[in-house]
Length: 307
Ligand SMILES: [Zn+2]
Image 1 (tube, rainbow, N blue to C red):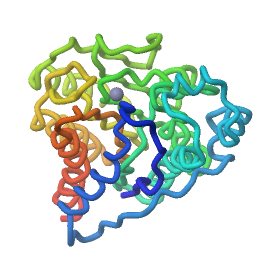
Image 2: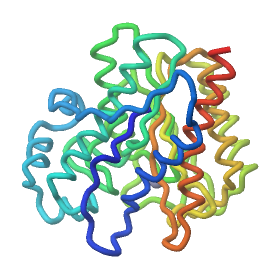
Image 3: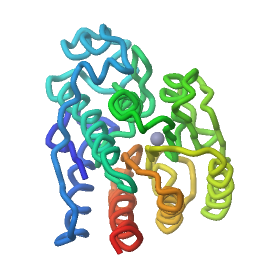
């Protein structure tokens, strides 16, 4: 498990992004998995410019690194520029690249990033707290480095559409983008993924799980060499932005369906964090939901693979 909470962007007071959640989730996961075997926590490396430019424009990467964005560009992303922010953005991609390279080296593996899942970034611009697309960069890097990786599934279960990845892979037959999201949660133009499924606001556990199970069955008709799972927990009832009604149990069953899918087809899996926006008075439900993604993944693989 990679984590990048060593880099935090200094934010103005009352900024709505929960910067502190990364460290709190990592500590919760480490606490819940204390003493577990075959598990390592590693600091996410910084992505290189070479890796980033598999996916993003060189000029965009350079301008971001040097702090040359326009006020409008900064507003679209939602963070002020800072040197720490550059390190955070680079490590947010680097951890996902490292996790992907780890699972590509051996079959039936999984790895996770306790960050990333920044699915609203495009070729030469960012939005919605996303500077770069970590999953897209990692997908392009492993396609270059590992000849046996030919088909990749981006499975995006964040409550928001993975609009950046939809566009980045629009004409790419090697990467299939699937986004299951809430119909009432677009904050910019709707894009076309290879498969977009919209659920209504206030959708319950049952509707969500029936829908996901059905579409995962449809995906079984294709074969994939690698899955990236964007495991945003902003589908949770307690989320401040999400507008859905899933319980913690529902989120955990959702994740279980993904883990079973990957395990059944022996597809390596990379898990990324994605969205989760606690209400100011109570962070626990969001922290618990994020942590459960990782803890359940560990327990699942321990019982199914290591056994
Ligand atoms: Zn989201």
